[in-house]
Length: 425
Length: 185
Image 1 (cartoon, each protein chain N blue to C red):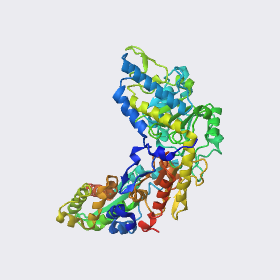
Image 2 (cartoon, chains in turn yellow, green):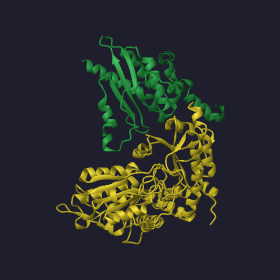
Image 3 (cartoon, chains in turn purple, brown):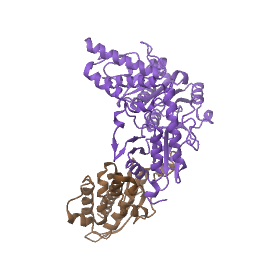
Image 4 (cartoon, chains in turn green, yellow):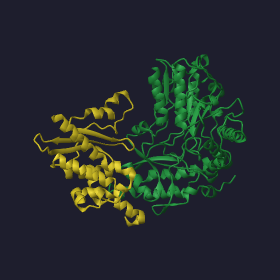
């Protein structure tokens, strides 16, 4: 199928503007993606026509709202190859990837305290057990699981990185041992853009009976992802990086694991029977993990975003962004600029972090912004990754489906003037 | 720099020659503090080089300032006279960061070294006011004269994301002076 990416770009009203007298070039999709008109409309239309609480109330709007909410869940499930049939749902609505990962860490902590009964014991941690992450993790993976290790006394370990920032898989048997209970690794490095070779890590985790958690924030928006095929146990990601609204995300879990997992957040709409004098009986997943009023309009719009992506075709999105990655990697050909991550356009996405020798990232960002180009500067919530490269902060350009090769070229051209402007050439 | 058109003007307004020059050869910078940001840590062995440790490292007349969003850090070291009125006899700093933070530290050293603590704290307040002016400046010639070269940071005050860069050193001055005075009592 030939896709008209120019027409797709035109679906994003925000891109049709000038910044500092230049047409906006948005290369910060790893931070958050822009939203197509259909997603913006879906959220507004929900409020205009069907807004009501879900899974409660018996009036017509409540029924329509519930239907829309569950339809959205099904669309999102389809995007990632998960089950959505009633009673078999594998997608939990969360407040975002961070909320989903914290939900897991909290639930494992609860299991470690004996909550959730016999079924939850597989998630319980005690001193001597191990939690394994990688040095490539975003703080939202690193910190919830590091905190979990402090709470339970489990040992915190990590997979190191190769020189070009890929998660090392050559010493899995050493790092992931019979004592390892939890392994949490990113699918795509949010700084390096490197796609992790997760298959051997998942295999090794399962070999020792550990639960494998995937941070899918930077993969779901750009690649065809099938959680069943990957055989991951849990995966978390955000809607706002996949052309959907902010404030909502999703947690995938294999059905049998979601059924065994104790709740982490407590309140309305997650309990079947509540009493004053003995413990409550909680609902089945996904409701068990969706306490409180849900961001229904945002979930509905996220469902529209998922459908919109599937209509374009994830293979097409991936192929298109690969051409942009190729162009962005030319940053590495400029004197004094170093790419932090794989230099070759293989097993990577269009997220390219770079360091400009002698010029601080804040200054780089300001210089680039003056030309209407938006990139991210700072540590991208991944300080250990930057230390791996001997830096504290960097500059990061990241593509979305709406970017053109010309966008990437504009950045490369602008970047050529950085060191001259700051007098370090 | 005219190649950058309209945005080039804005960029020039922000990165005035004084700033670019001072950031390349900043005054008052000496090497005396541990460096939190560039340590290859993440390992237990590097635990003594964390920012927390750097805060603890500080002597009575020192203050460690850190901007977690970009990693800029400055340890400001001040020596204040025993006799009153207390005077800033020596002001040096150690750190690294963007051109705005480095230049601001440099200009600050030129401006307050040798002044009384009261004068320095007054200048700190005026500079703070300038940085809160959203590009408008102080509209007060006398105050702007007092700031000397530090008025070039007016252009920076238009950019909310960068104000903290310009204030990093001044926050360190305020804190280190307070600590130095407290140690005398």
